[in-house]
Image (cartoon, rainbow, N blue to C red; front, side):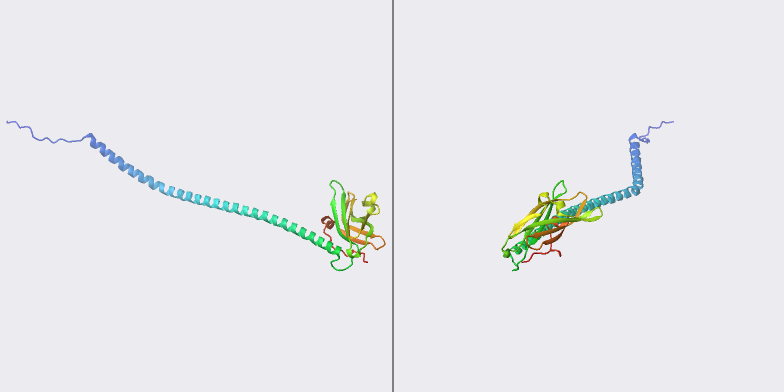
Length: 249
C-alpha cells in the first residue's frame, strides 16, 4: 500500500494569551460602567436634596447678614438723632434762659429810666438764692429799684422770713432766726436808682423751705412786701405776685 504524502496545510486551534487579556479588560470596563451607573442612580436622590439645602442655607445666611447690617445702620441713625436732639434741647434751654434774662434786664432798665412815663416807687426787682456748699446756708441777693424820675435817695432796711415744713407742721422762720446777729435789724440800703443787697441765711437741718416773704421798710413810708416761691428764687425767675405792694409818691 502506497504511503500518503504529508498534507500541505495543517489547521490548528489558535488561543494566544493576549486575546484573553483583552477579553477580561473589556468585561472589566463593562462592569465598571454598570457599577458607575448604579452608584449614580443611588447617589442622585441623596445628593440633590443636600445641594438644595446648602443653597438655601447660603441664601438664609446672606439674608441674615443683610438684616444685621440694616439693624446696625438704624442703630447708628438713632444714636445720631438722639445726640442731635439732646444738643438741640440744650441750645433751646440756653436760648430760653438768655431770653428770660434779657426780659428781666429790659424790665429793670425800663423801670429805672421811667420808660412808661410813670413815677414808680420802691420795688423788689430780683431775688436770688445760691446754696453754700457743705452747709445749710444760703447766699441771698435782693435787687431793689425805684424810678429815676423820683430824683431822691431812699433809705431803709430789708428783712426776709422763710415759710416751710418742719416735720408735719407749717412754720415761718423770722429774719432774727435766719440772719447774722450783726444784721438783726435787716439788710440796710440807701440808693437813688437801684441797689443790690447781699446777705446769708441759715436753715435748720430738718426744715424744708417753700417760699420767701420779703419785707422792705423805707424810712418814713409804707413797707413793700413780696412773696416768692423758693424754687423761683433758686432760678432767679420771679413774677409779680398779688401781695406785691410798691411805695408810690
